[in-house]
Every structure is written in C-alpha cells, then in structure tokens.
Amino acid sequence: MVTAGVNENLGIALTADNLAKSKATQYQELATSRAVAEGAVKQAGLDISPEAASGAVTATVPPDTAEVRLSVVQDSPDAARALADSWVSSLAEEVSNIENQTLPGVEQSEESSAQSIVKVLPLVQATQPQTPHTPNVRMALALGALVGLVVGLGVAALRSLNDRRIRGVKVLEETFGLTVLGTIPAMAGLGRRAQRNRTQSKDSNAEVESRSALLELTGHTGRDDFHVVEAFKELRTNLQFLRPDNPPRIIVVTSAAPAEGKSTVAANAAITLAQSDVPTVLVDADLRRPTVAGSFHVEGSVGLTNAVVGNAQVDDVLQPVSEVENLTVLASGPVPPNPSEILGSDRLEAILRSLAQDHMVIVDAPPLLPVTDAAILAAKYDGCVLVVTAGRTTRDELAKSLGNLEKVNGDVLGTVLNRVPTRGKEAGYYGYYGKSYYSSSATPDQDFDVTSRNAGSTRE
Image 1 (tube, rainbow, N blue to C red):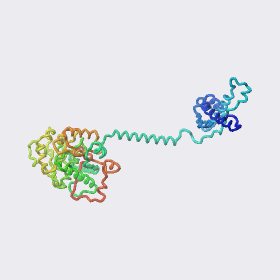
Image 2 (image 1 turned 90 degrees about the vertical axis):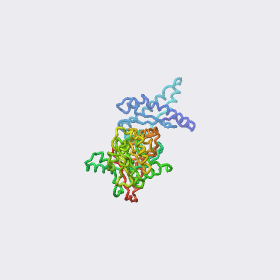
Image 3 (image 1 turned 135 degrees about the horizontal axis):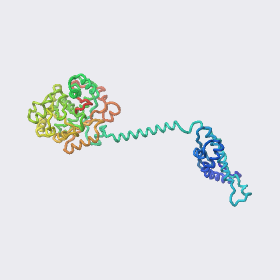
C-alpha cells in the first residue's frame, strides 16, 4: 500500500490520500521494472533471471485506491510466495530510493524534512496457493466442452447448408410450390421378404426383386402393412379429386432419377383405384427397363410396342390381373430400338385416349433426367405425378426435372414423397406421422391389398 505523510488533520489527510492514490498509479509500472525484479530475485534466492521474474509478476491498482496488488506465478507454491514477499520489499526499497533522492535546488536541511513522505508498506504477507494456477482442469474442461459444442453446431450447420437432399413436405410445397398428393412410408419389411424370396427362388434376381416388391394381392392385409394401405388410399383419393371440373384420365407417373420408387407408386395407384370400383389400366411405358409384367405375373413379351407398330390389336395385349377386379395391365412388350419415337407416336396417343374413355389410365414412365421419354409423355397427356424419394432426391435434381417438364409444357399434377421414415423424430420432419395413427384402433379392410416396390430395388 502507498502512504503519504502524517494525517495531522482532515485537510492534510485528504491531501495525503489523493497523493498516495496518484503515486500508486505511477508505481504500477515501476512494480514490474528490472530494478525491482533484480532486488526481488536476489532477496528470494531464486535461480531465475530478472526478465523471467518480471514476466511472472502482474501488478494492478484497483480504481480509487492507493493499493498496488501483486500476482506471482511460479513452478511451486513456496517459490511463488517467496518471490511475492521479496517483490513487495524490493518495490518498497525502490520507491524509497526514488522519493529520497536529493531534489535539484533544494538545500540538504530542507530535503531532510521531506524525506520518507511517500512510502510503500505491505498490507499482508503473501498467501501460499493451495491449487495450481495452471493448468486449471475445470476451466479447461469447460472451455473444451464449449469449443466442442460450437464446433459441433458449426459442422451441423455446414452439413445442413451443403445437404441438398429433399427431406420434407415443406420444401416441396414452399420452395417448389408443388402439391403433395401423398407421403408413402418406407417399407423395410419388403426388403426382408425380397431376400427370403431370392433365396428360395431359382429365377433371376431382377424377376425376384420385381415380385418381392409386391405385398400379397390376396388374403388378409396384416396390421403391420395397414399404414401402407392407408397411405395409398390417401394418394388414390387425392388423384380422384384432382381438377374436379376437368379430371385427368391419363396420368403419367415418373421421377427425377432411377430407383426413386415411381413404379411402386404407379402400381399401387392403379390397384387402389381399381379396388374403389374405378376401371383402371396400368401401362408400362418404361420401354428401356420394364417391370410391370414381372410384378403382376403377366406376359411381358407382348404389349404396348406390339399394339403401336400394328403387330397386334390393343384388346389382344391387354391382360387383366386376376387378383384385382377392375385392373388391367398393358405390358411394355418387346424392347424397341427407338423407345422415344414409340412413346411420342400418334398411334400410342390414339390407343391411350381410347382406353381413357372408360378407364383411368396410369402410365409408368421412365425417369426424367436420364432420357427424354417421360417429358414426351407428359407433354401429350393430362398430367404427371412426380415421385420424390425422401432423403435421396436432391433439390437440384427436382429443379432440373421441373425445368424439363416446363420446356414441353408438361402439367405437373403433384408430387408423392416416397420412402418416408415411419419412426423417430424424422417421421414428423418428413411430414409423416407414423403408422400408429392408422393402426391404433382401426381394422384393415379384408378385401384391400396393395403392391409396393422394394425400397432397395434398382429396377424402377
């Protein structure tokens, strides 16, 4: 603590106090000077340089006080305490030397009366630290946790910004302005069924996958599949109420890329419509990679291409599905060398328009991005349904697909968000509320069955 003079009366005391405060501020820098450091190191008997000692000492002056507070950091508690005590002593000695210097123009007798007006006195002895100043384990852990949290949030935000996959109904509706006609849940059970059937069957993997993608067309629909049934019923209802004044009769079902599940949606839409007493024709227009014949166990070697080129009459190549009343399949037929020309022909349009007079026609079309076939079909008929796979289809793919349709004036009736998670918090995020909503108290229809493509199939 810095003191100044003797407090003989109140006025002198106030003056001395102000002087002491002023001197304390001045001596804050002196406290870490080399001169003080040399004296302190010598008194403490430490084997360190004055420069190192100065770097280990911090001097502060609290506001409006005459105190100079010292903080000392050393390798051991004893060394820290010894250096702190010796530092105060060295500072007091240095202040005394400065204050007692002979002032120029002042006689010795006058100087003697002015000696020791300002002094530095230790208030307390240095306390020996009980815990290390560094490393501060608690502080390090807290800081590490904070840094980890910030980094984690940053990485998550960066991944979210860079993730272009479509993950919810909101993106389809608000970002792209599309109508969502249905959300189809992911059906992991079909993958297990496909594996079991593949093991038991001697047919090719493609044929097995195609058939394994079907839920049973006959028999009781189990409770585990009931939420799937309800999802396709919702899609059916929305399709039936599209444009009430001019309802579409020929609907093209497509997707941005292969393996999005568009054949699943097309097949199930056709079945649900047929089971609601709507005569329906499912047309396999994916001439490059047809799947409908294998899914419904019908003959695939005759069909659409035969009718278009005139090798057969349409009625001769239409094949009813025995397990589903009101459902007829027009398979692709032989794979032609010119699929785009077949699909864009006036003959095919005449065939489909004729069928649409007394049927709802669902066209399973190729994906939009690899080939132009789907855009050709969308331009000629009543509208298309675009299948989007949750967590797979990207915004860029969807935007490009919509651009391709816009170029040919194709009418997008809406989208179907496919393979939506049914469990956990992601279900609500994707716009699906889980199978418990449908199956908690309801009983499945005895006469309703539905097909569904295997989530892992690459044939669509």
